[in-house]
Every structure is written in structure tokens, then in C-alpha cells.
Length: 132
Image 1 (cartoon, rainbow, N blue to C red):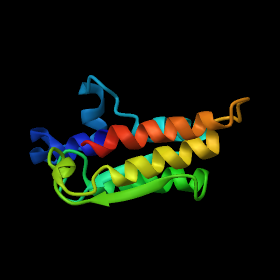
Image 2: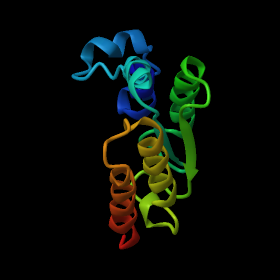
Image 3: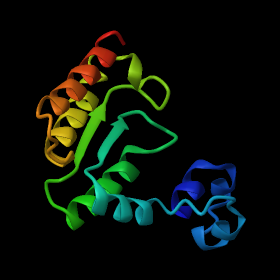
Image 4: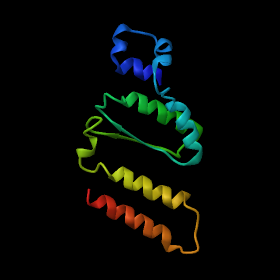
């Protein structure tokens, strides 16, 4: 989103309107469009660090609210301590991710002939993240 670029990059010091910045961006940053498309397919886990200066929590909350408006109670927003590159250092960082993957697999993976397959996938996820 150009509005986010204006806020984050030095040109924002000039208080340049987003409309003037948008053509200069290599990436159009169409986060809201991607969220709308992705929310049709699967639940989205929005992880937001409280002190993130690269992706401000307010921006993440707006994207979550957009997804939630399209599909209420399908998506999850988690606020984490730390910043953009430090949130993963805190205890229990992976807990919401494991819970999200487990819930998504249980809800969205189609039934198979082998009913234990989902449980094996979930077990593998838990083992993968237990060592981190």
C-alpha cells in the first residue's frame, strides 16, 4: 500500500501524498487485494509485533478487519511482543502458529480414506515446532 510506503520511507518526510509515491514503487503493495483473494481460499493468521516499525500493527489490524469483514470468525489476529525482527525471540512465539496450523488442518483438509493421516500431519507440526 502506498500509504504505508509514505509512512516508512524517507520521502514521507516531505509529506508527499500517497498518490505521488504509488507510481514510483517497484511493488504496488496491494496487500488488501491479496488479503481479499486469500481469505476466499483459507483462513489467514495475522501475526503482528507490537513494536514493528516495518509493518505497523495498525496496518496489520486493518488487513485483519478487511478479511474478517469478508469472512467473519475465519481468520485470527495475534499481537506479539517485540519488533519486526525480534518477535520470534519471545517465549511461546510458535504457539499461535501451531494452533492455527492444527485448526486449519482439522477444518480444511478434506477427509481421506486413512483417518489417521490428519493426526500424523498435526503430530509432525507439533514435533517440528517443539524444538524451536
